[in-house]
Length: 553
Image (cartoon, rainbow, N blue to C red; front, side):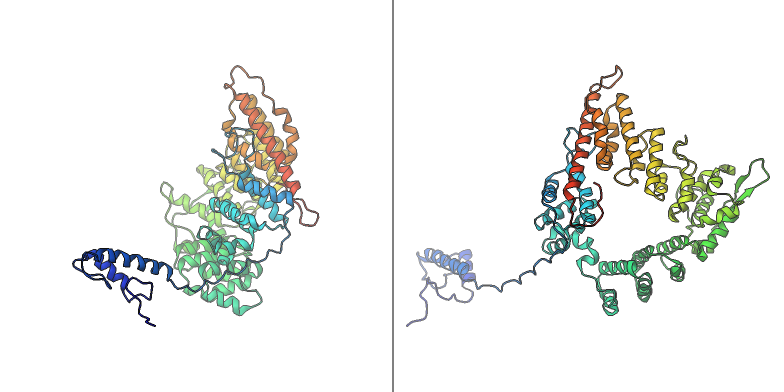
């Protein structure tokens, strides 16, 4: 049997047959006879026939490629599943999209903004230890991709399946960066060889995650591990690694931080100095106390005891080594700049002894010479925040009813918010409630943001009363859109009953903005609807099989 195929048959192609056909087509059959064809008038037809056969052969004659390796199955999530009603609620929350303008009084309509409730829902679900339904994990990743504030809670709730999916889609790669170690499982703490191997050979994200996890469990071991490679690390990496020492910071970290004060990087030196100043018994804190004490003294020669301030006249090498930045920012005097840094780094506990045994409240109340009060009190504010000192924070905040816009020590609402963060939740809420009762809501937005959720009853009552006063004043609710949006997310759901009396359209005053009453009624209706929905969502998440304490939405 003849095994040689006839021209135009579907046999094994000659090497380079397709290239020959292409060349003949480009040059023309008069100049280049197609392979297996006779020259003449029939050559073009033969060329097309041969090209058709070769095309079929090329399409149908491909050899099967080696099958790709199948991905490993998704890991199991051992957490208990959501109750059915809560799972359906999650689907609704993920399907909703934020409306134009976001939450608050500037939004029209009475329907709640579901996406604004998703963060609290995720926090409550995580607190109860539930696992995300597998079919919702892609939507959770999509939501987290669009909103970075959702990522920690969403990825925690999505669990190990989120990392598994993120490895399969470039759209979700952010989950690998956000997951501890870039999605890589960290070695057990009781295996020092694996810990050392990952520390020496792992990627940067893996090393950061390893150091952070180890620092939370064994602070000394984490610091000793960092010391093994400290001298060879890049400056930007040393800064990130040094920042991890904030967790579990203690006196035993002082020798390592003292060495870091001589680092080549100015940022590393500044961070080391900041950490040492947070240790009241450290040598650096003692040096700063001596320097700051030389600048601030009690003048008893006046009729009223007064704080006399003499700012430094130079920034010497010792001050720079201890973290004082010599060059002042534009528009700032050098001496006041140096003074602020010294006072900020000095332990607050040294001042009562240096100033006649006075309490922080009494010290803050003392007059200060030569217009240095603002600079001195601002530095004390920063020190109270850094050293987490509740007594000094309380003194610098002063009474919430104080007429000064910034209080006795704070020079801005932002500083007041930081000082409030050093108080316990109940005291924080009571202080902000008193501030709102005196000053109203116009300046309270930043302060409300540091209060625990749901708001305590005195704070919730103060906010509702202030909103009612604003409504009765006849202005539009849009000026209070931020506070109204916070109220939807932060008021206790039980407050819905107190709001029922605000749902009716009030009688308009002659000097009121046209239609303001209707807008307020709509905003209060949305607030009530949202609060009741949050109450229902909390009930849906309740499960008798989970012993974790409930967290209100």
